[in-house]
Length: 325
Image 1 (cartoon, rainbow, N blue to C red):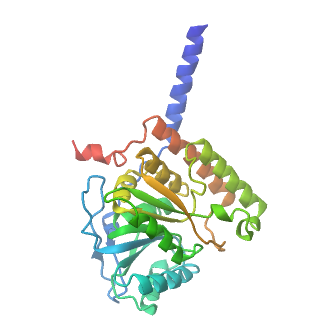
Image 2 (spheres, rainbow, N blue to C red):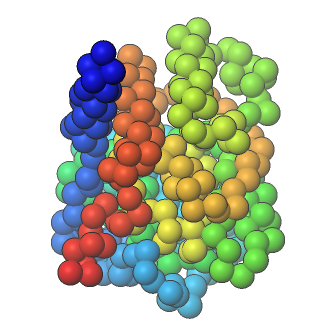
Image 3 (cartoon, rainbow, N blue to C red):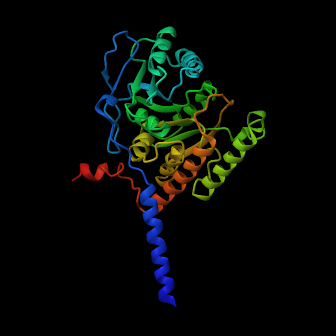
């Protein structure tokens, strides 16, 4: 009897392991043109991005600037303007000549790249402050964020959603937290809407949207992120130390990528803190509630189990092993 039970457990484990491997993801390498950018100099010339950050880097260009703002975009001509108006006004007033904005165009077909360049000129930005990186194939929000942060120049890197749902000036709270960290201490500042759970911004959402939101939060809690109440807010800041220790190892490229970011932070015992931000619902979300919720649930379970089973490792998605061979 014990033999049969043991055999059943072994078969169950092998089946689960094989299933996780089947659903696991290894990001593709960037195409050569994705290591370049265009800017608002009316030339359409392609310029080289800084070298891709790796987990073995020891310094980061002597921190050419303070802030790198990474904005992932997929067909965002209708929403990006508000975000750029607000962010550029704040950054110019408080961090002039100390910031860059990286628009990562994730295969848009609506002219997001040209729109961003025209907006940069309209807002009076000198060339090379706003940089547009065009991905040749759609990677998903997580892939776009990862690509942008790994080619950033700032001491701190923020990724922010293109819809401008979060009040941009709240970045000050995140910077304050980062400045309090010890030298070379990896840190993650997490913009959070948890304090808004009973406000109109959340209460007036549709029943199905709130139901799926709470369902996702439950899964996140079950599968390991228990100290962070709001994992999905698109307003997170990293210092160079956390960028190099998180993003080269990323596997997940779509909506649930935030959870892998935080898992990698927890696994490596980084200092992470939720900070309240002001947020409002903005129309035009690209999330398909039915389809993407199922995908997010699968990705969440696969990501957590892949780390527990050793399928995902801190080896730059297997590339670090190849470098050392």
